[in-house]
Image 1: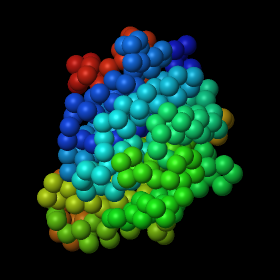
Image 2: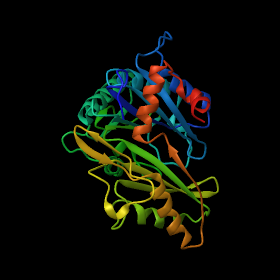
Image 3: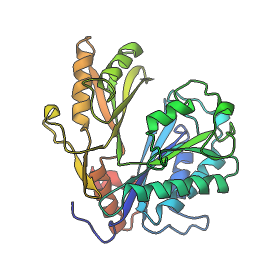
Image 4: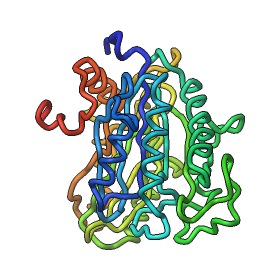
Length: 330
């Protein structure tokens, strides 16, 4: 993909916010990623998408900016969110620990390294805990130096998967002892992670868990880079997948009609499982039990699509792109 002068050092942040039922609040957080308190827009920054899920009570805001601008955009959005969301009153099916639950930063091209993103992630963690007194964070991925523990491992260590985490027993990497109002925020960096959710037409959560176990990376014969949760969702079961980019070329034994999206960072090739393969695998496993799938949703974009949309938005001076994309692209 050709690069432009505007898009030469772009990074993405898929900001996970523990609120979806008050959409005006989520939009206020998105706007704070674009404008300072005086209404002046941050340079080279756009919000491409806002994904809301009512049952999960969770939103994902896709922020793209130059690596020099991303920190202030994220911190401004976080300040707004922590001022508006009280985790003591939060309800929702999706596991979460913080008002801002996750801040992952991803490079969008050769011009920015994962380590550049890791430096920004660590700076965001320090800045957040300084600006919003009482907040706390754990680090993951390349930001977790020198161990570089992945998000799933860090979440297990922090008790993120438990229904009622023991907050007082957790020792955050940055910031104060965890306060219930703010909770705990995960902050990190890695090659791009896509989210792909496949809904199966059943309320049998045990079936969903067995399908999730079969396709996750850690299972022999599972899909590379795929981490899975099975969750009840709107009267069905959703197979919610984090699809991590993996180093190297696509494995020959897992080819499908749709090619694996591929890109490079620092001269190293990366690729990720296409959503069509995840959907096909889930459909096959569910079909053996007489269950069909209802649909697949991508949260955000593939890395190449994310960059191309961001370059377009920035070249046109569109900050609030999520309001424009249906008019431009659909």
